[in-house]
Image (tube, helix red, strand yellow):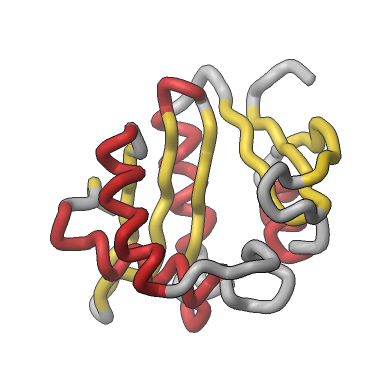
Length: 146
């Protein structure tokens, strides 16, 4: 694990795109890889704190936090590395970085993510409709009062 650098931005966008493109994971209207490559540096400049997971094959996952808002905005693992513990290690980084607690949301139908967050000790806070895509989402909290 290490903090992301500008040279990592395209690899972060690639993991984000490939992972969020899996069925039931990302938004209904998935942004293109090029759009995410443009977005990552803007989000970092706007306040994302990004930690990346690297192994012998390269960048395999990332975590993006908005610490000033106590929001875990993104946590993605390269599809071929799912189930290897990288997600748990990234989640542990989020917990260590925001011991006061944090929230996140995911698609209501993203069963794999929901099981992951619930096993990690997060609690379901509420259900809602995504303001941009109008699909069902669920909010979770770690170490927060519901």
